[in-house]
Image 1 (cartoon, helix red, strand yellow):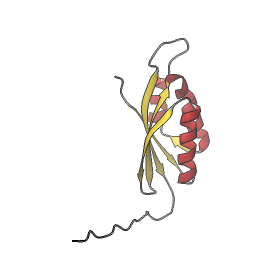
Image 2 (cartoon, one colour; image 1 turned 135 degrees about the horizontal axis):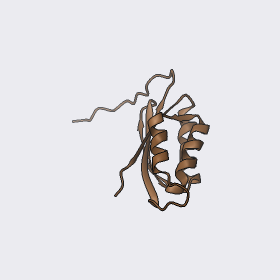
Image 3 (cartoon, helix red, strand yellow; image 1 turned 60 degrees about the horizontal axis):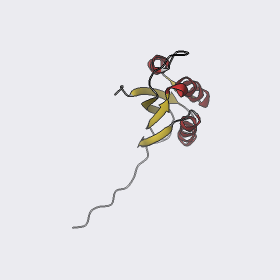
Length: 116
């Protein structure tokens, strides 16, 4: 089994638009979302599976959305993308951690007391 493709990015766009856009990009690249983990309104992690043929397009589309991958993530995508005519993995499991840069306060949720 191959290693998980770990990617990280930052953005200043609205977190709801970024999350919907990333979901759409994964599907457009021929993959699917396995799950999300939200960390208040500060960050989100997307777990996904993409065909290797969709890796190059994924990076470009995410950047065009306004979610900017760091240099290590761009290099990791390039390293896992198959060269022309090269046979490789059929699918790649990955995780994208997105940090949202904004001036909004942290989301607080009230947790009710447990009676008893």
